[in-house]
Image (cartoon, rainbow, N blue to C red; front, side, top):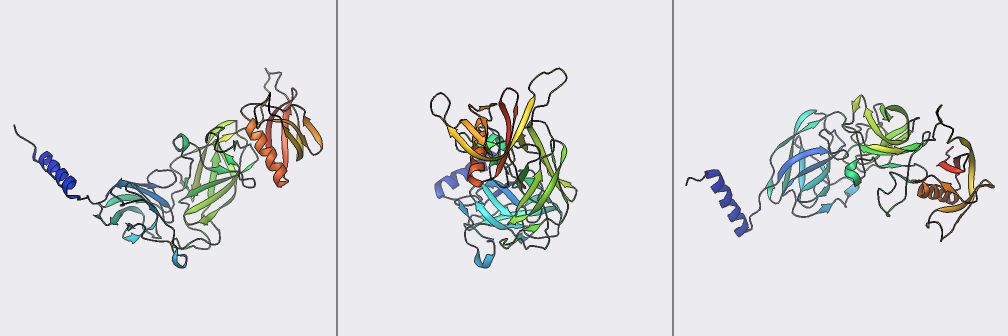
Length: 355
């Protein structure tokens, strides 16, 4: 029986590797944006390189000599268009690196070098900007990493992190903080190879839409090496998981993660309820809990600005944990809240009021 020579030699090399401890050189299989895992990156963008034999072990950057980012971690180096990249994390199957300053665009060569040898040359797409938003790893990265900027509450669907963290949903008019990479140059210019000590605004205009509607961008700038912060005001969009699309200098992100929104219910011509009876604004001065007939963590009485809001708080599920979290933040940080309720006493929204 005739045997394919390629099969024979592959089998032989496998035997040699197993018997002699020989390890193959690193192989790059993909190079993507480190935030959205889509093709395309720019200078000062975190990238993720995947493949095999990329490193002998796992390591992360930890030493910054004179404020300079390391170009070698765990004996691994990466070059992009022949220029050393800054290595943040290495493992046998993945490398996270920060693309160096370079005016070149188009397809550029990426290569890994470690104790096992030099990898193949992988051609990756480099752009002037490649905006991408970081997303929670849960649900396959479906939801953007979002925080309320003053309370630092995580904006995410209820139960996304199990019992590990309480999350809240955003409401129209609130200011949210998004985080991303690849938003390009800043003013004044910041060398990518050095630690960021002073935040700097993005040089080109940044736009954001939520649910297809324009969101007011209050700030967009570099706050850490390769790490950008964008503060936006939620427009008047419907309740539900709404896509967030960012762009800089006319370059749109390659993906649209979601942010959960909760809005006040609106009455239609055919509805007699719910009708919003009113809203109460002020600092929370009383909140009590009862263990027994209600689950722990659900408030049973609350007072805002000296006015009793409810003697047996009824919160439309699944907002009870959000309600408690925001009330507690109001008490702790002495910030006012706004609670809106219908004629039956059900609380629909409770949000922190910022000046």
